[in-house]
Image 1 (cartoon, protein in one colour):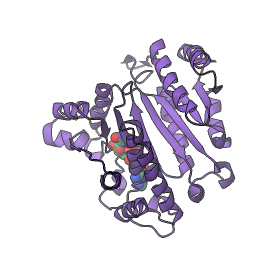
Image 2 (cartoon, helix red, strand yellow):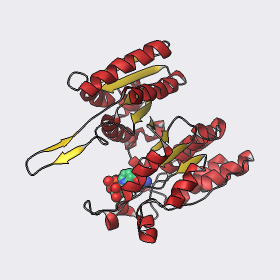
Image 3 (cartoon, protein in one colour):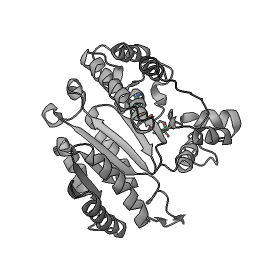
Image 4 (cartoon, protein in one colour):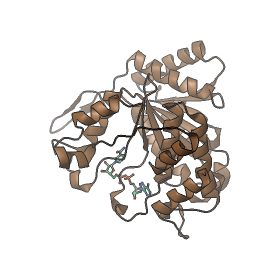
Length: 331
Ligand SMILES: NC(=O)c1ccc[n+]([C@@H]2O[C@H](COP(=O)([O-])OP(=O)(O)OC[C@H]3O[C@@H](n4cnc5c(N)ncnc54)[C@H](O)[C@@H]3O)[C@@H](O)[C@H]2O)c1
């Protein structure tokens, strides 16, 4: 919020910001994980910025009311089906990753994950001796996510990698057919590659700098994006955007509520600040301001500011100091 406010001052913009409850805080205050007021307010906004939901206090998996229900419903209400997770490694951060520095030079990739279909949403059943989760994809769901990824790849380095498991799964064979057709008919300029998810998991570690845009289904994307986040060295560094057909989007860092460090003032704010940049770019059409925030983040890192999660045992600043440093670089 401080960064957004400073950006508004610098650029002469006025943002109207409303705060609403979701998740555990909302369960405590209202008994529900997503009150009607919150939904109404989000639907009336150009963009939604989300602080992670959940924590040990509400972690009973058998409870009827749980924080993550609020988030799943909010995504459905906003009709955001495309989850964008950019992973860009700042040169000065390459040593924070468990991968060798030489593999990380030039890594600048974007994973586009389908967010509202697939096995997470199919019918589930369970008996004492068996269990099943149904995986369904409709053609229109694949078409629209490939289109989003195609548009993003066209505006970047022109490379698109579609990830599936077409050697085994019917949903993946449909995925590959549609991804091939949509890219051939609508994005002939793109260099398109199809990878099986097991191979993609390997290539993400062996040649991460080769990727530009990766598009994949819900569960594969869930797993690959966490793997890709380790290229950056910490969950605390990375932003995400969830988009639908409209310009309205939902923006959040990829990390959760980090209950193990809660209240100590040491959380890395970079992922949240970078999410602010995505919000300005994708929902408010303020690309220049977005780039300014990203440059301020990069310069802050270049000047040696590190929170504990990326300090590799060296000296670290706290959340407030890190944020203040980014704002100074904006100025
Ligand atoms: N989108 C969301 O709202 C979301 C996403 C993931 C997890 N969660 C929830 O968050 C809670 C904790 O989940 P988890 O522990 O699996 O994941 P987490 O991302 O909260 O934490 C994983 C590890 O990364 C560290 N970490 C995370 N963010 C950091 C930051 N900004 N700076 C420094 N270190 C950071 C944590 O300290 C922890 O060691 C759970 O209740 C989970 O359901 C919510």
